[in-house]
Length: 205
Image 1 (cartoon, rainbow, N blue to C red):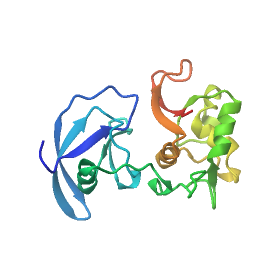
Image 2 (image 1 turned 120 degrees about the vertical axis):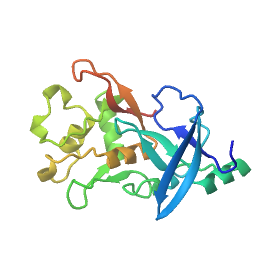
Image 3 (image 1 turned 90 degrees about the vertical axis):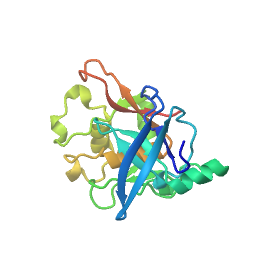
Image 4 (image 1 turned 135 degrees about the horizontal axis):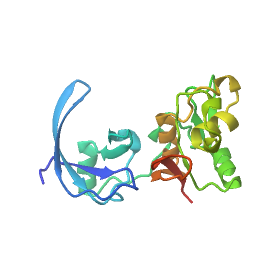
């Protein structure tokens, strides 16, 4: 493997293991053109890093599939390494103690209180739920889909209900929920709700 190779690790734990392969990308970042040889590994638990330093590669469905490490972090890891848990700086919508997530489209000073969301899900016996993010008014959700993430946030956790008809479970908010360590992304079938497996969050217990 080339000295300057960077490692990729799958972010979606529900995905099938990927065979090792070399990928070549031309990455333009901060007006610098960098040719990087990327090596993929099947061991998705091999790296614990600061998420703010990672670039994500998304699949056709919009889900993050790979996390790309900066070369400096890769070298530090190989030297004996980088091992730190995600901190509040891992996502810009999270507050310092990772209990509050800023809702960018929920109105001024709108926050989702993560412990309250966890308590709500526990009270309703929900261990995983479809994200179901949609650019539509709240009343357009089918009745059987009202206990999915986007409608729940709009209905139960908005201080200003004038914003209930705006999507709240945006990709950034979902990423922040995952960054708290209390949720992980999965693909899940919900018979009678959706015709195929959909993007969902599972509560990490």
